[in-house]
Amino acid sequence: MRPRRSAILLLAAILGSVPSAAFAPDLTAQADPRAGEQIRAIAANPAVQEAFRRIEALDPWGMERLLELTQIPAPPFGEAARGARYRKNCDTLIDGMASLGLRTFLPRAVQAPIIVTFHAPPDPAYAFKPFYEKVKARGYLLYPGKLTQVETFRVGCIGAIDANEMRNVVAAVAETLKDMGVKQVISSRRWPCG
Image (cartoon, rainbow, N blue to C red; front, side, top):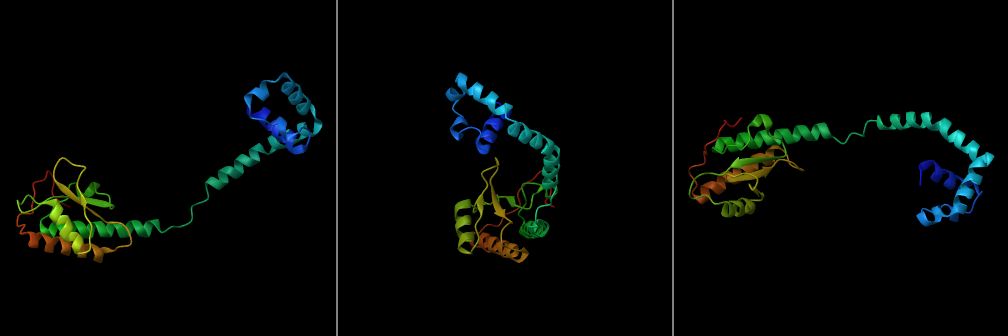
């Protein structure tokens, strides 16, 4: 059904010129020859014609209002402050892990402040599963690095946490590596951390 024809039928049903049953999206009902006669009769109705003139006259005004609505700024949700906190969390985490000798997978210039991927220590005493469990026992969850071809692990920087929490994560990682007997943490990279 063409939009104008649908609108005529709907408007006519609203105005009471035709029973609402005549406005049927059923294609077989629309193919009925009597439907065309009814539509022509409705379209010829002066009240319907006047209603469409008013609708069409309001169209530019309606478009202007719609454009105005789309330009209303969204209410502040604290995006700037949250983004700054996430960036500080990320920087604190990267700096702390670097002090342990752990290096990020991505260079800092392209690192988003959401989740940071670190190279796993190349030490034979390191294994992700026990590392994960021991850090978890200290109150922090890590993510396995499944998105790279080298062994990595990931740490999130977002949520209701701050830079102090990131320092605590670094401390938990340092204690865990010490408990595991991991001595070699510096891994080879194509670019330096930072």
